Every structure is written in C-alpha cells, then in structure tokens.
Amino acid sequence: MPERLVVAVDVGGTDTKAALVDAEGTVRAERRLATPPPGPDRVAEIVEVVAELADALARQAGTRPDALGLVVPGIVDPARGMAVYSANLGWRDAPLRDLVAERTGLTVAFDHDVRAGGLAEARLGAARGTTNSMFLPLGTGIAAAFVLAGRVHAADGYAGEIGHANVGHDEPCSCGLVGCFEAISSAAAVARRYAKRTGRPVRGAAEVAALLPDDPDARAVWADAVHGIAFALAWTASMFAPEVVVIGGGLSLAGAGLLDPVAEELAGMLSFQRAPRLVTAKLGDQAGCLGAGLLALDLPAAPEES
Amino acid sequence: MPERLVVAVDVGGTDTKAALVDAEGTVRAERRLATPPPGPDRVAEIVEVVAELADALARQAGTRPDALGLVVPGIVDPARGMAVYSANLGWRDAPLRDLVAERTGLTVAFDHDVRAGGLAEARLGAARGTTNSMFLPLGTGIAAAFVLAGRVHAADGYAGEIGHANVGHDEPCSCGLVGCFEAISSAAAVARRYAKRTGRPVRGAAEVAALLPDDPDARAVWADAVHGIAFALAWTASMFAPEVVVIGGGLSLAGAGLLDPVAEELAGMLSFQRAPRLVTAKLGDQAGCLGAGLLALDLPAAPEES
Image (cartoon, rainbow over all chains, first blue to last red; front, side, top):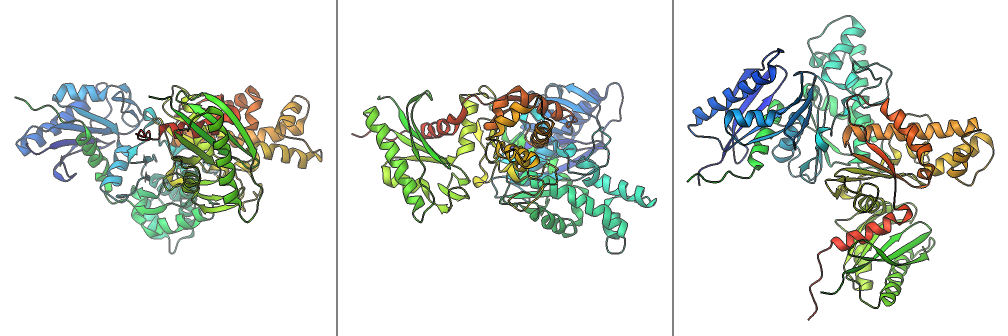
C-alpha cells in the first residue's frame, strides 16, 4: 500500500499556510502564499490560492495526495462544510469544503482553525496523552477549542467563541458589549491598552511583557489580562474541567510570566472544582495547519484505483 | 430472549428513590426509603438501603433485574465507580459501585445524579431530539450536566460544577468565595435572600415567585437570580453552545416567569454566539432515577446463564 500523504491548508487573515503531512503527523514540505485581500470575488480567489498550494505540494512530492484538510477562522460548521461567518475574511455561508473539493478533485476535511489547532495540540503537542483539554490561543482575538474524550466539540460551529464572554470589567468592546474577554486579554488588547494608557505605542504584547519589571503601567495592563484569563479558566474548570489548558498565541510567548500569575489567581477563584494544569502551546503557528492535516488523515481512505 | 429490566436508584440527601425501568425507559414500579442520617457507618447503611430497594423491586417484578443503575450527588467519578466527595452525604472516596455490586450480585452502572438527569432529559425528556444540551437543575444547590453528541461529559467527575463559578455579584458564599452562581440563583438562595432582606421567612422559592406582581423585594431577589442564570448561560453559549438548555429544580416551576426574563437578559449578553433555546424540565424529580436506569440499560447485556 502506498504511503498516506495529505495536504493541509490554514487560511489566515494575512497568510495562507500549507503543508504536506504524512500519516505520523510529520510535516514533509511547507508553502505559504498571501491570502487575497478583500474584494468582490474573494471566496473564489481564496479557493484558487488553496488549489495552487495543493498543486505545488503535490508536484513537489511527486504524488497525488490522499486528501486535503482545510481550516479557516470565524464561525465554521464542519458538518455542512460551511464557512458560516468571518469578519476578517468577509464571507457569509460560503460552501468552502465543496468549492475546494470541486476545484482540486480531492476529498476535503473542513473545520475551524482553532479547533483544528486544539486537536493538533491534543494529539501531537502540549496536551498529548490527556483525555480532556482546552486550547486557548491568545492572539488578535480569542477563541478556544475543547477536546473532550478525544474529540473536538464543534456544536454546529458555535463552540469555543469565548472572546466575547464577560470576565467582569467595565471597558466596552468593539462588538458592542461590555466586559468582553478579548477586550483585555488578547495579545492585541494588551498592546492597545498599554499604548492608550501611556500614550506610548508598542509593536506588540511582547514589548509590554518586556517592560513588566520596571513599568507600573505595563504591570497594570498585564494584571488585567491575567485576571481575564483566570476568570475564563474558572468557568472552564467549572463546566468542562479539562485536565490541561494549552495556552497559545502571542501572549503565551511570555511563558511563566503569564502562566504563573494566571495559575495563582485561578486558584483563588476555585472552590472544589478541579484546577487544570496550565502549559504553553508546543506547535506554535503550525497548530492549525497540522490540525487540518490530522482531520484529512482521519477521513476514510479513498478506494484504491484499479 | 427475556425482557430487559433494570433497577434504578437515586440516592438523595433526604430520600432514596428507586424504580424498575424497562428497555423503553418506562418506569414499571417505584419505591422510596429515607436516606440514612449521618453516622459512622453511613456508607454501609446506604449500601444496605440500595440493596433493600433492589430486592423489593425484584420480588415485586418476580424476576432478577439485568443490572442496577446508581446515582448520587457530589463529585462522582463514573470510570472508577467512586463517590469522590459529597458534603451532604459525608463521604470521601467511597467505592460505591463495587460495594453495591458485591452486596446485590448485580452489575452496577454508577454516575452523578445531575449528569444522569441530563441524560434522561436528553433521551426521554425536554431535550429529546437534540445533539447538544445542557441540564440545569436549580434546587438547593446548582450543578449542570452537558450532553455532547449524545454522551454526558464527566471529566473524571468534575464536569458541571458551576454552582461556585462567578456570576458577578458581591455576596459571600458559604464556600468562602464571593459572587458564586448558587449564592443568588438556587431555589434555596431565592428563599433565603428574600427572608433576609424582608425579615419575613418563606417556605421556598415558589412563595417568592407568587409575590412577584406586588412585592418589590421579591422582584429584586428574583432579578438577581435571573441575572445569575443569564450570566451562566452566556458562558455556556460561548463555550459549549448547546442547542437547548433544560432548566429544572424548584426554581423552574415558575415556568415562563423565570425563562422569559432569563432569555431576555441572555440575549443582551451575547454578541455572535448562538443563544440556546430555554425549556423547563419534563421529568421532574424522576430525572436522576430515570437516568440511572438508562445507564444500567446501556451496560453490555450479561451473558445468558446456561
């Protein structure tokens, strides 16, 4: 039997990453193209970019891939193969799975980028060996993935949208609500709130983290972010009680500088609920792409051509 | 093949309910005994009560049941068959599944009362026909059950302990934390807070509900309870996104008087998350016992004696 190889594609707001992944989840080759900017035919253009990446990887491998795994941000319904909504990518109800399958002739597994990342961290990364885990990438925005008894919970695409749940602060969010998690705890919020507070723009959350030892403003902004994360994890511990929470995204680069204060504040918020073990992500910005590969590998094998 | 019949037992703080349940989930006979009061041998005494109920129901049916389903409150680890902790029943790490199996000679399915109730509401009750549902009984305390793709999420017994998650208020809870969900939204809390506020004791939350049209104190206490429920459901919608939330327990007897204001406040707390449909429980205080029956029926059938 020939070796099983799949193409994995992760469509992001700026870049579209692709990889050739083997049955062990190892990346054999990688390619990347810019995601087409907003325009009237953006869905068609994105389908074209995905196909181009798949073609190039297949040529490079000298073989036809067995399947294609595709992940995108926003609200994604894997069962219907539908990109329901993405503010960033500007689509509503785009039947991406079928469009890409038609264009490439490949069987397509389709899901949400963060849920796929959660699956990858659970099978290959920081939550390997656990039954129940949460993946929490803190980047531009915040969404989470819940891997429960080894399966990613999707709920028709609506699971894990915790960026706009209330963590108990008074600041308005761009979504119109007050108290949203991502308004104080995303990497983007940390940078934005520090700049607003001090009048000194920073390039990102990492710069704020570097200022922590000497700058009370950096500490105040960081403490708010920590509070939001601890609050969200207290709810997670109370509802799903994961063994491990894998924290990823830009903010997680602070490592113990983030995880230690979160664990401390979280402990003070729990009664007899089980506190999760907090770890940083292992797969970095490859998590979504690797997860797309795993989803494609999980598809039933195509019948042998004869 | 003889008809499949199981004994279902739900050990509560005051009463222990038992039923003979057939393969369709229909209750054929019921019995009830007082749960033994606290004492040095309480675990052994409770095992005895369970066995007595099982014997009586078997004699009544004139047959040996195929299995026994047992559910209890507190922290319950179904995989290990362990009653990990219950403040009410006063045990820690009691191997109840094996104790009851040994005493009765029956195969025992063992789980948490609220999780079993959630399974029963999902298969036979108010959430029938849905894939993802939440069961939220608002009684003396608050715990929840999450049914995911037809299975109840247990997380080693720690899932659903949302009674002490923070819903954003200033009142201390008996657990030592501040802002706990069950400190304002349980049926017991509604009665207690009304009595404290007015100096007029009430028999229960139903009495407070009856006072709503004319009594601003009742309305204030009720509004706090509604706020807590809406807050908890906003987190549920953001993380788990169930299609339906089945509200049970004493407080749910208020029907639309509870569900309508909760749905309204919840709508104002959601951005693009999916709002669940809110319904009242159908199975009343039989839910836990019926769920115990379903768990016993789910056990693999015992080999035929020859």
